[in-house]
Amino acid sequence: MPPLYLTEQGAKLHIENRRANVVQTDRATAPGTAGADRELASVPLIHVSEVVIFGNVSLTTPAIKTLLKENIDVVFLTMDGQYCGRLIGPGTPHVALRRKQYRAQGDAAFTQKMAQGFVTAKLEHLRALLQRHNRERNDEVLRGAVELINQQLARVPRTTTIPSLSGVEGAATAAYFGGLRQLLSADWKFTKRQRRPPPDPINVLLSFGYTLLAHAAEGAVAATGLDVYAGFLHSIDYNRPSLALDVMEEFRPLVDGVVLWCCNGGQITPADFTPGTDPDRPVVMSDRARKRFIEAYERRMAETFTHPKLNQKLAIRQCLLAQARQVAEAIQADRPGFSPMGFR
Image (cartoon, rainbow, N blue to C red; front, side):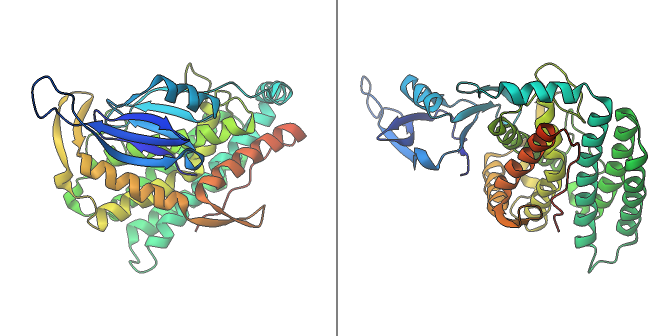
């Protein structure tokens, strides 16, 4: 089930007859009269996995209570996708699993093995994206980036600490983005990956897409009963869903592919971005671009892929859950390791 995205500023969500109804109150036509509610969307509650709110959108109190009762999370983001907070229902009663998770996290060998699996899965998918786009181009820069990623992949099993593994991941990722730059026209002015703040439209789109993916991964990890904050590759930090970030790593190139499709296909153009006045937000994405990106992202997440371990066709969003369950199984069995999806 996909999330319900609410992007219209001033909209309000209420629930009636087990349907999530999104309305916007138009301005009153005469002084002293109330404005009329205009319906923007109406979705059966059973088809909503979570609610993602951008900016100034409100929920009625009965809607909040219903969403909590139905275990439908509500994620609050700023207009440009920065995380504000999350409304969640009762926690899952998986005490035994979480105890094992914390013990496993305290085991350096277990942690290193799990982290190596996450990095291997990510780098293999980075390589696959560049190789796929280079089949017809035969670009020397892309070939060089693939070779550098191969070199770092060979180093992964030899790492003995998380910092050394992070160094391998960082080197491969830098090579990858050097290759990704070749797949975009010069009009986009993309030179390198930069997160805070994103200085150009491509970085804005990447950050926005990764935010959506991170919250999808957080929901998948939480559904298994694991603690989303106790990861292996990503260090523990206050309010950082480290395990969700671990699981999402191999899925990041899916977002990159959506960015390439939107930008190279004309669905989003440089004209959709304007200079911002806030130093923390130097580039502002238009509402039109935001909606188009979300639509493209959701189409990609709904595509099916045969999971290599389950030998079963799953939507990409379901693959996130399957990979989170793989982590839970490794912890339960005390057998560290993580098998990649093998996206092509």
